Length: 389
Ligand SMILES: Cc1ncc(COP(=O)(O)O)c(C=O)c1O
Image 1 (cartoon, rainbow, N blue to C red):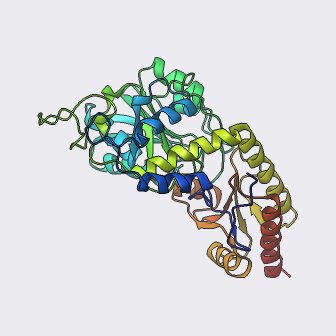
Image 2: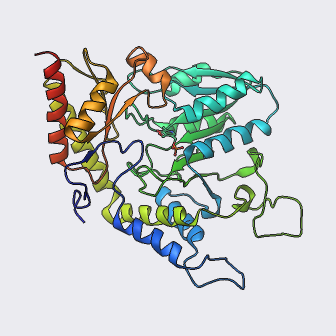
């Protein structure tokens, strides 16, 4: 299927894929429908319907996609925020307080806020490592490590700067120093290859509704060794139901209550769609769109580009002399170009790059076309030039 074929809203140019992707592949929508048409599947039960066991199928598919050795250690949650909360609070509950934690200025509030809350109640002390040239280096992390450092939480890809962090050397160093490493892959999963068989992260977080093309409300994490994370949510698992104790087997250990079946079905179909197109093809197209977008914006002096060579299909910019939200409003109303303005839930990045004022972010998906980028950059330049005639 060709990109662009799916945009049935005549004229609308959707460049807010880093928030949530649109459109979704037809196969995703079909799988959601099928998951609702078929009776609920209950593995090993008399009520088993013969329908697809979506949780099992999605775990297998995601494990293949991320080169994760243990499909049963892929846990489903609502989204990346839910995963990060479960992991950060679960780790803290299991660790003698107070301990030292390292995070980075590149983080989203889904990392910063749980850590801040725990710092405020005295459960941990926190060092936030700065970024240089849009990246956080192993050297910067090493410099922040203390005797009592037990946890590092770090984004894989910045949702504002589009920079991918080199997590492999960090993971290897932290593993040898027995420091737990949580990686937030919300912006990288689906855009670039992720091979967890050769990167020893302790927990890798993903979300479905961005580049994995699922519907909102489904995400998860891969946790090869669950022992460091306390179970903070108990309930029915459909297993060992005579016991009042939460089962400790994976994945039920962290998955109580009825699954989000349509969400899991959509995630399963989204990843299969990516496999069908080919991740390398998707990544290459993202780089081409991004490079041409940056090239076009560079032609107007009053457009300030905050990330001129991003690794991910994200371009963040401001227009000299015009408020960001006004630009976003004009682009949407006058040109039907949908961007995301403001702080993008990443306040520490904005303090560094634009004095905390925020900016305008354009982000692309496999379905974005070169022609859409051409029209959108033309619109942005027109807005900038009309402010400085
Ligand atoms: C880097 C990063 N982490 C976490 C999140 C939170 O993702 P979710 O909406 O799936 O909770 C986002 C979403 O914007 C993000 O960009």
